[in-house]
Amino acid sequence: MKLLSRIAYLALGATFIWAGVAKLIDPSAFLSSILTYEVFGYTFAVAASLFMPYLELCVGFSLATGFLRGGARWLAGGMTVVFLLLLIQAAVRGLDVDCGCFGSEAKASETGFLWPISRDVLMLAALFVAVICERCGRRKSEL
Image 1 (cartoon, helix red, strand yellow):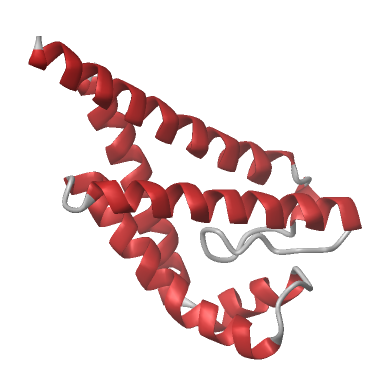
Image 2 (cartoon, rainbow, N blue to C red; image 1 turned 30 degrees about the vertical axis):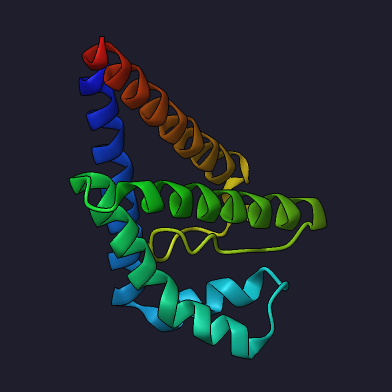
């Protein structure tokens, strides 16, 4: 159980690190992606485009290494839920969005929303599995 938990945390950590680095490489493309969702004002979008990559890097590092993992779990779950809700509302509204998740990607309207939404659901499931397996591993070692 501990091994499965570690693998899930490493995979999630790597995913958040990858996403953060991709956004740091081209911050203006990430800003453009945020604006395509038509939910946030320009000032908030600029602040988010500057802050989010660093938050993702910190969360990814914490998940992968175990350093401050408790808070990172909550942040990873919260961010993933927000990303998921943004994608769903864009799909329902028929917006032509660029996910912005891992650098420049094809528009979700061209490739379909199924993959980005599924990816976020898989990330939430992996986080859930990691937490459950970690707790089961702790209980077994306490016995």
